[in-house]
Image 1 (cartoon, protein in one colour):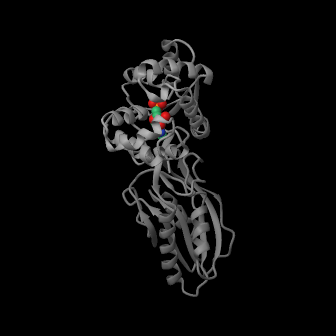
Image 2: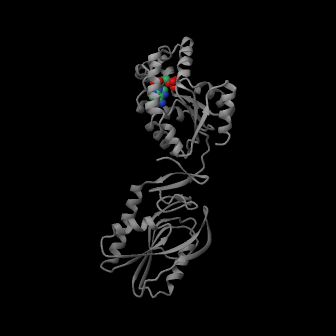
Image 3: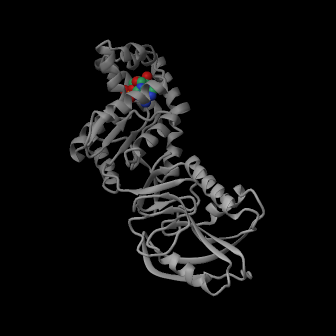
Length: 370
Ligand code: AMP
């Protein structure tokens, strides 16, 4: 699960599907017990409660009816306090047990409107059930009979709840977050110039540069356990297994608390690394702002790498077959990440041929917009 962007705001995972399911089941059990053999009519308050209402009645163990009213009070992330009724009730509720299903009760304005609407409907018993409740902002003295979960006053979306109409289709609950970092994935095939550019950009933008290749080489040189493990893969031009690489990357990030952000160079290189990075950053309320790719043709790169091999001392730069193998790894496992980030509107391609300064300028133009 990763951070999602809705309009101009970011939201981080908060409550899982399983957690919501458990809360709903507990509410169903309580209400079914209290209703006994009485056939209740559940009334969902639209739009927010449609998912909760659907899951709730699917779990309800006995006969029941369902209907909806549509009320609206939110604009953006704050309640306006004025609630309007957009779709009303047309059932005869005389003598019935009516149970309102609300997704969330915060200030209580909607709840007050609900009590007003049902006051003159000759209802037998009126009860209120809400999936979420924000006790610290509730301003009314109105009864709430069943509460799924009390939560702090934080703006949440998902599972029917929206931010300016987006986010209702997310199947769990996310809460608003304000990322403090700028995190960039510098992308491109081996030899595209990621290391050179990252060195320049990290100073210009005050970011921490993490090159997984450099970390591996450092460990190989110092003959650490990690180095010994990675050495055979690297020297053959193969990728180091995901689990090893992901753990190492996380440790590198953890070493740098309170930084303005990271330039990830050489990571992620597989889909599972990209997913792990998203999930890891989301636990910190952070996200990848963009993947910037240096686009250079393969033939040009082979020559560049062989040239670099003369001075770099890297065994994987000195042999054309190993270089070709690195391209093969790139094309089969890494290149697909372009789509992964493009789907999140986070992919930016840059022409990687030209002078170092020109390329830095091209990259900077993009970073400035992130
Ligand atoms: P680089 O310096 O980025 O070209 O990386 C050199 C080598 O280190 C690669 O060919 C891989 O063997 C290994 N390596 C670096 N980053 C990763 C990664 N994210 N996943 C797996 N292997 C990696």
